[in-house]
Length: 510
Image (cartoon, rainbow, N blue to C red; front, top):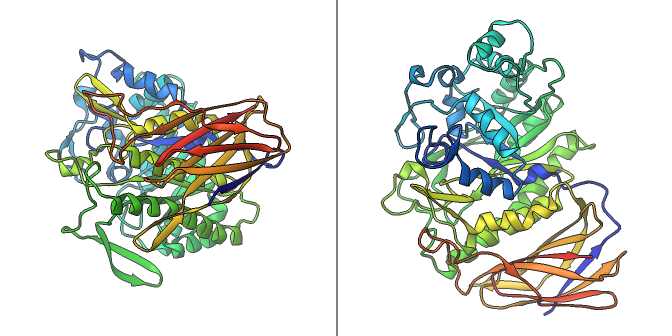
C-alpha cells in the first residue's frame, strides 16, 4: 500500500517550542565528570574546565536548555556542598549511581558557566525528597537575588557579583520513586508548600515545574492537576523506551503504584539484538503518543486553556550497560534503532506541541541515549546526535498539521504504523517535514498532497544503514551519519517520495 500524507501549509496556530529539543545532564556515570567537565588543568582542550569539542558539537545542534543536577541525584543533592573553593567542597557518596565518590567540583557556578558556553537556558531541579523548604528557598535566592541578603552575599563572596537569570526550576524529581516514594496526594501538598518559596526576585520570573507521573500513572496527573495545577507552569512526565522493564509493580493502592526493582530482569543489548527487539522498541516509542494523549486529556479537564505545559523531561531508550562497565553508570551504545525511535518520539512531541512544550532526552553524554560518547580525549557523535541535527529545523517554527494514512509494519502478529511524520514552517516560509520509516525490510512509498503551497524545490537528508545495529565507534566515528536525499519527485499537487527501510528523512520544501 502507498502511504498518503496531507500537509496543510496554511494551517497551524502555535509554534513548536524549541525546548522540545532540550537535554538532561545528571551526576551519573560519566555525564558530568569525564563528560562535560575535565577541569582547567586537563590536557584535553577546555574552557573553564569544560571540553571544547563537546561544547562546539552541542552548539551546532542548537540545544535550547539543559536540566541539572538530576534525576535521582537531585533529591539527594545539597547545593551548598557544590559552592566555594573546590578543594574545600564536601566529598559525598553517589548512592544512586555506582556508589562512587562525588567531589562536588561541578556545582552551581560551573553549571551556569556551562550554560553560558553552550548559549543555552539552565533548568535546575531542586531537592524535595531529602531537602528542606529553607534549602530550596536559599538556593533560589543565591542564584537570582540582586540585593542585600545572606545568600546574595555568599554568592558574591564566591566570585559572582550579579545574579544569574534562571527561568526553569523543577520542584522535586520522581517523587513517586527515588524522590521520596510519595503518594500523589502527599506530593501535591508538598509541591504547594515548596513552590511558594521558589520566589521571583527582581525581574527574574521562574517557570515552576512539578514532578509528574511515571508512564501511565494517570492517577498522579489527576491529583496533581486537581490539587496543585493552579500553582504550576509545567508537569513533568517521565517515560523510557525499553524492551523490558526492570521495575515491577508490588503495590497499587488508591491508584498509586509503588515500584520495586526486579534484579533478574534484563533490558537487552544496545547493539546485539534481533528484529523482535527492534519491533519492541518501535512499539514502545509509538506508545509515547498514547501517553501524551491520555495525560493531556486529564490536564484539559482542569486547564482547558493549556496554560500548564506537559513536560517530558526524561525520555529515551534504556538498555543493559555495555559489558565491562559499571552497572551504575548506565553507559550504552547507540545505533540506528535509537535514531529511528528518537525520530518517532520527537514527531509525537511536535504533533502535540500545543500541550508538550519541553522534552529532555536522557542524557547528553555517556549515559543512556546519549548524543555524545567519550573515551579519554576522543569523542564520537551518536546516531541520536544526528537526529537532533536534522530536526533542529523544527525549533520555534510554526506547527503545520499533517494527516497520515500509513501502511503497517507487522511482526509476529502485531502491527504498527510504518511511517511517522511531523511538519513545521520556518521564518522563511519553508516547510520542513520529518519522516520515519520503521520497517527494517521494506521501503515506504509516500504520496504527499501539499495544500496552500506549490513546491518549487525540495532538498533533503536521510539517516539510514544496511543493518539495524549500525553504530559509530571511536575507531569508526562516521559509520552512520546523514547524507543528501534526492529520492522524490515534485508534482502539480505535491510530491512523491520513497523512504528507505529503517530510515529517518527530513525534507525542506520551498
